[in-house]
Image (cartoon, rainbow, N blue to C red; front, top):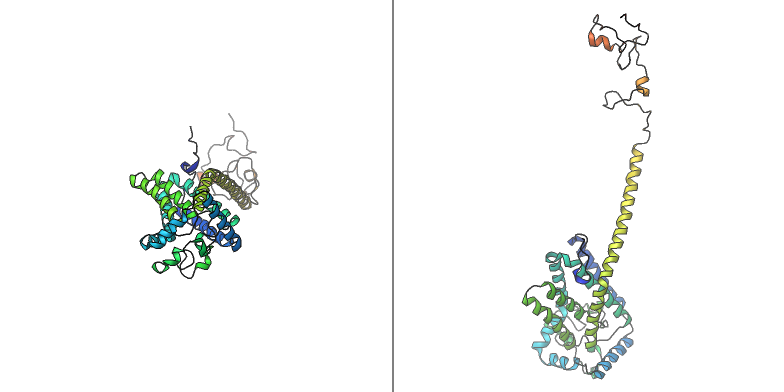
Length: 347
């Protein structure tokens, strides 16, 4: 009985995946993600209004953890500087490393996990487009937030504009705060480590990494708490949609493969027909070619006569009997090898 494909991250790949196809695919998705963030730049006034609305909702729900964390990171460099490094680098390192590890060591789970991550990333792009949001660090100073990335920029490679390298801040969308894909990707990493890590250390890291990332994005004033919740929600929706995305991709691949096979077959048939143009049942086959000539065919009925010599039935070469038996050594005539006009021997 065939094994059914399980939904979620347990799906088994139908075809063997190759690194030289996976790497360009991942780079393409990340390029689309980066370009989408840039294209999703909205009106700054609307982004500020969205940020203030989120802050008001959190205060009403007593969820405003950003202020105390930001004050702590601003006051204590031994916390603020590592937090800035964490925010600026780990999502670029941990996520690809886990993808490569899955590809090499847990191949049966790789395709589903990769599809989950990519689907959630595209959903996040929709959020950036529909809801541009000003992060806490870019609000007016009267709201009580300090940009720790700018405060500790002398410790790292980033400047005063987000976590981009110095001079490249203009190439990022600083108002793409909702949802927080820092938290979303960290949650993906945590699930992967928990399910496939296999060791106690991996399970501890599975809990600690997304939890610390959530604290870091709020303490550095890059995201609100609701941004973090939205990042987790996006990953949940991506997990539910991943099996449907894989099935759609399988159907598209099968349809494309069928069309390609049909086109290849048609091209091969056309080439074969062009190679056999002019070849028919009446075409002559040269002697000595090894191709048997049917009895009664045009070649067999054609008379090979030269110099008044006749051939009997089955003989293609004139004077064949003389060459076979020598002069004066004719065998006794019989109805089988006598010519049509030869008399029947006396009995």
